[in-house]
Image 1 (cartoon, rainbow, N blue to C red):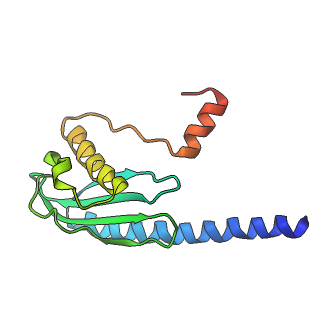
Image 2 (cartoon, helix red, strand yellow; image 1 turned 180 degrees about the vertical axis):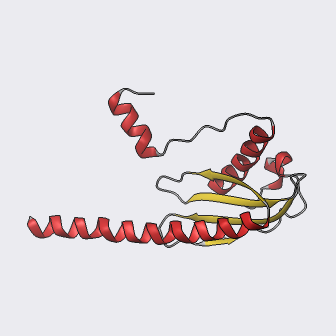
Amino acid sequence: MLKLGLFVAAMFLIQAVLTSVQISHFNQEFVKLRRRGKVACGRQSGGFHAGSVVMFLIDENGIIREGKQLTGVTSFARVKPLDGFEGKFVGGLTENDLPRHGKNLRKAILDAKETYNKVMNGEIVPDKPSPFQRAGRALTGRT
């Protein structure tokens, strides 16, 4: 039983290290884009499916200059280019602009659009709770 406990603890530690490396890589890519201008971000949790985060480098008019995505189930996923959106207005993206992308990537792109529109209208963008936060709130009775 002790061996099983040590094995599980080691797996959690390895997962934490790999996640830390992934977050560091994402932050480096975000900072690179941010140094070049404004960035619109969107995200969609995946649960047991591939989650997605998108970043669009935009100009002062909200026109997309470059896109990047982080999509995957594991902590081995890395930031990759997201092509096909250059020259489009981030606040006007629709489902018709996204036919070749997966479900969670499409949702993340539309989330970037919604976030951009809210910020431009002066609204506060609320944090989205993770699945673990939602479960914790359900168990404690908080909303």
